[in-house]
Image 1: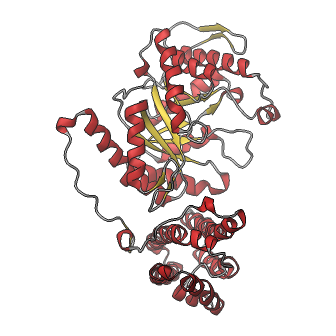
Image 2: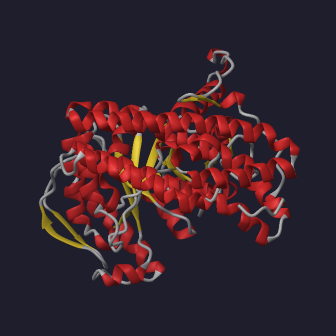
Image 3: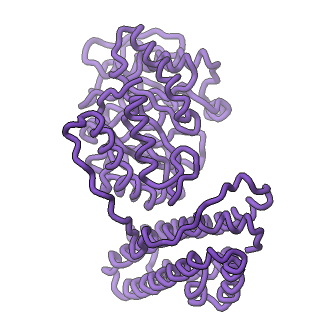
Length: 491
């Protein structure tokens, strides 16, 4: 285990949901704007709600100019390697050398079989992957016609080409010993995911890869280590991997870079706030920490990080209370606290719908008046979903019904636990901010109805609403979920 001194890349793992295709393209463009290095797209062709991964990657390549792209990872049982070789090379040419290729032996065999693909045993799947990698590399290498006779794939005189403009890496998604050994023998990279390969398991898996590489006469440092991540940003550490503030994330990821040779970190997360914190706070901090270890004599002393400001909300001034362990509570109590999260998830979902509708207006598929009507409908539906989760002026602006609800949950919390009073007061202030943004958004929509050139102003207001509301919801959950559960309050 070692640091292989690779450049560090930070990326986004985006869900190819067909229903949110406009949002997906927008997120990819935003990832590039934020300075991220790579975008990964999962490949499950048997998922009817997903866009085809290769088609999507092609569209994203056309909408971006710098960021790298890769299937994370491609489903080889449903992607004939000879055709895949030409597809990958073509996209690499058209994108200016921005394509890598994550490859996997296959999973979810019922779905693969339903699409007409083979059903393979674990041993057969590993054999087929090795053969497919040979086909891919042969068709990317200038020379004579390719003839390969394998048990699972056969090429009978195919002409190589077109040729990628840069060496496309074959990054293997692997967890079990045989796949890890194959990665060490043949792979240009390794792509595990943290839910299936948690950090504490990486050293043993890495050892298998490195040993196989050495046995094959290869330098283990030639194999890129790519880690798909899941986590949660919060003000205080929750005890789990990547559960806490950005500084904790940076420490944990720097340890993986220096100790396990991980150099590509790809974060799962489809909301812009998460992507922004990832790109603007975590990535620079990890790079600085790793560089300081690699060249300590040249490492500058980093200044104290400024307080993070999200729109008009300043993180550093938010009251925060000591956190207690939810695991000590009964399942019924924990479920009561999670109701607030479920409520907020509805609001997050509808915010996403607003952004999608805005893109439809921009594309000329919908009218500005329809978007305004949708937002008005959304605030009415919140009457039934919030059940008091929003407070004070925001609720009063929406409906009298919310005012009645407001007079229930927050006063009950403050009465049951006096120390919550500053948090409640801050949440009330933030709802004033949300209310003002909603008023500004409505005004921008009215102006756009009268003058379509006002679309940029609407975008600004929606971006501001997204920043502020997502930040606010996260803060409210951090501070109130545990008290709501522990105090057994009916929200």
